[in-house]
Image 1: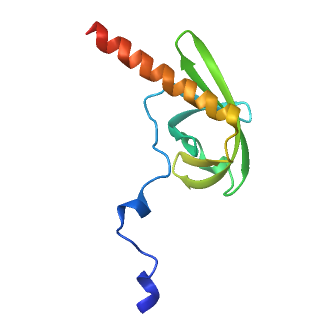
Image 2 (image 1 turned 90 degrees about the vertical axis):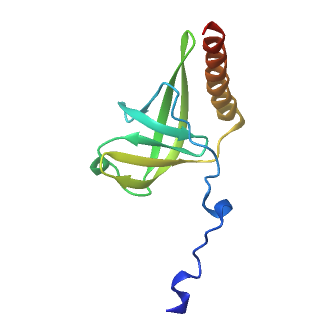
Image 3 (image 1 turned 30 degrees about the horizontal axis):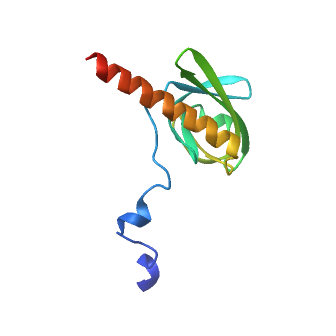
Length: 123
């Protein structure tokens, strides 16, 4: 009984995500040719709305994230695996990102920051 809580910690640094989740970007994901809405994403993974019955736990997935940026659509193909399934939601953990994919994620964030700044100047 004493070992029941040995791995539990209240330290905020132990429970914080490795990278912050982004929810404001216009993004969909394409898996096996079918589009799924993205609830949130980070460079470590994403949460999509999907029928969880179509996917197996720990199954590898090929995914293309499609972001609407200013005047264009940016496709970011990536690989990952299913780490969590809940009702109508699927969590995918990405494989380690390459330099090229990291630069594309940076483009998405830079575009969002630029649009937010421009909108703040018009108000």
